[in-house]
Image (cartoon, rainbow, N blue to C red):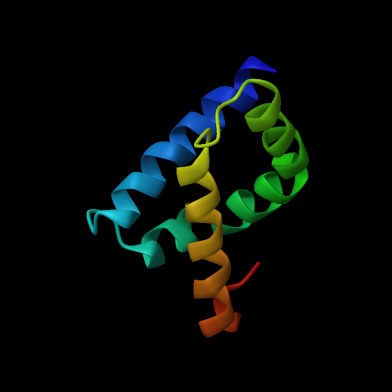
Length: 82
Protein backbone atom coordinates (compact mmCIF):
# COMPACT_ATOMS: atom_id res chain seq x y z
CA UNK A 1 0.00 0.00 0.00
CA UNK A 2 2.99 2.30 0.49
CA UNK A 3 3.55 2.74 -3.25
CA UNK A 4 -0.05 3.95 -3.65
CA UNK A 5 0.57 6.65 -1.05
CA UNK A 6 3.79 7.64 -2.84
CA UNK A 7 1.93 7.97 -6.14
CA UNK A 8 -0.89 9.99 -4.57
CA UNK A 9 1.61 12.23 -2.78
CA UNK A 10 3.05 13.01 -6.20
CA UNK A 11 -0.45 13.76 -7.47
CA UNK A 12 -0.96 16.05 -4.47
CA UNK A 13 2.09 18.05 -5.53
CA UNK A 14 0.97 18.18 -9.17
CA UNK A 15 -2.46 19.33 -8.01
CA UNK A 16 -0.96 22.22 -6.06
CA UNK A 17 1.24 23.19 -9.02
CA UNK A 18 -1.76 23.18 -11.37
CA UNK A 19 -3.94 25.11 -8.90
CA UNK A 20 -1.22 27.75 -8.47
CA UNK A 21 -0.63 28.06 -12.22
CA UNK A 22 2.90 26.63 -12.04
CA UNK A 23 2.13 23.58 -14.18
CA UNK A 24 -0.02 23.53 -17.30
CA UNK A 25 -2.81 20.95 -17.14
CA UNK A 26 -2.15 20.16 -20.81
CA UNK A 27 1.32 18.87 -19.93
CA UNK A 28 -0.07 16.78 -17.09
CA UNK A 29 -2.67 15.27 -19.42
CA UNK A 30 -0.16 14.50 -22.12
CA UNK A 31 2.27 12.86 -19.68
CA UNK A 32 0.01 11.05 -17.20
CA UNK A 33 -3.64 11.91 -17.82
CA UNK A 34 -4.81 8.35 -18.37
CA UNK A 35 -2.96 7.05 -15.35
CA UNK A 36 -4.31 9.84 -13.16
CA UNK A 37 -7.91 9.18 -14.14
CA UNK A 38 -7.71 5.40 -13.83
CA UNK A 39 -5.93 5.38 -10.47
CA UNK A 40 -8.17 8.03 -8.90
CA UNK A 41 -11.30 6.23 -10.08
CA UNK A 42 -9.97 2.94 -8.69
CA UNK A 43 -8.85 4.31 -5.31
CA UNK A 44 -11.43 7.06 -4.75
CA UNK A 45 -13.58 4.93 -2.40
CA UNK A 46 -10.51 4.08 -0.34
CA UNK A 47 -9.46 7.72 0.04
CA UNK A 48 -12.99 8.91 0.80
CA UNK A 49 -13.17 6.31 3.60
CA UNK A 50 -9.63 7.15 4.72
CA UNK A 51 -10.58 10.84 5.10
CA UNK A 52 -13.52 9.92 7.28
CA UNK A 53 -11.82 7.22 9.34
CA UNK A 54 -8.75 9.31 10.18
CA UNK A 55 -10.55 12.67 10.34
CA UNK A 56 -8.54 14.09 7.45
CA UNK A 57 -11.16 15.96 5.41
CA UNK A 58 -8.48 17.53 3.20
CA UNK A 59 -6.55 14.30 2.73
CA UNK A 60 -5.49 13.99 -0.91
CA UNK A 61 -7.83 16.82 -1.84
CA UNK A 62 -5.28 18.19 -4.30
CA UNK A 63 -5.06 14.81 -6.04
CA UNK A 64 -8.84 14.87 -6.37
CA UNK A 65 -8.65 18.43 -7.71
CA UNK A 66 -6.04 17.33 -10.25
CA UNK A 67 -8.25 14.44 -11.32
CA UNK A 68 -11.17 16.83 -11.88
CA UNK A 69 -9.00 19.17 -13.97
CA UNK A 70 -7.74 16.25 -16.08
CA UNK A 71 -11.31 15.06 -16.71
CA UNK A 72 -12.35 18.61 -17.59
CA UNK A 73 -9.42 18.96 -20.01
CA UNK A 74 -10.21 15.65 -21.71
CA UNK A 75 -13.85 16.72 -22.18
CA UNK A 76 -12.64 19.82 -24.00
CA UNK A 77 -10.00 17.85 -25.94
CA UNK A 78 -11.43 14.37 -26.55
CA UNK A 79 -8.82 13.69 -29.19
CA UNK A 80 -6.23 13.51 -26.39
CA UNK A 81 -8.28 11.38 -23.99
CA UNK A 82 -6.94 7.89 -23.38
